[in-house]
Amino acid sequence: MVKLVYCVRKRSDLSVEEFHDYWLNQHGPLVARLAPGLNLKRYVQSHTMSLDLHEIIKATRGLKDHYDGLAELWWENMDVFIDAYSSPEGMDADAALREDEAKFIDFADSCIFFSEEHTICENL
Figure 1 (cartoon, rainbow, N blue to C red):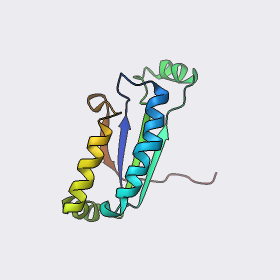
Figure 2 (cartoon, one colour):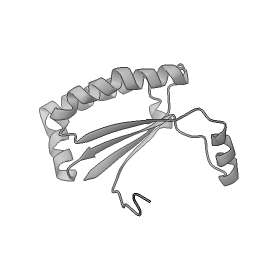
Figure 3 (spheres, rainbow, N blue to C red):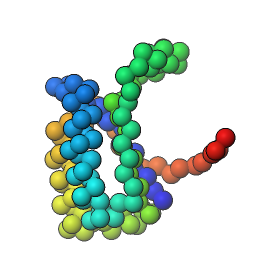
Figure 4 (cartoon, rainbow, N blue to C red):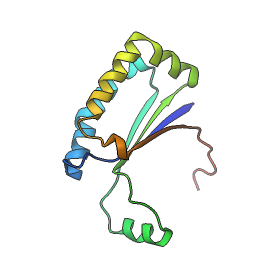
């Protein structure tokens, strides 16, 4: 499996609540509807919780501000991803997703990358 990780920050004109609501209730269903044309195996949103603990952890490590959320998208392998995104259906789906993401994501302050998982421990 190959995973695309998308660390997202909200647009400045949205509250955290508006951002999370739109992402979950508008964008999520759009991804689900377009998933077959993208050969997407799995899509997960992780919404950052509002906790004072973040500031403590950040201060002890000298970290930057946290992202507002994290999206993870899985494909069987890189060839499946490339084939999907090279097809007319995949290109249309990608354009629709980017257009919708512009409604709630600050692209300039977000990042996206492919990754491979390496499980170190499980069920401890």
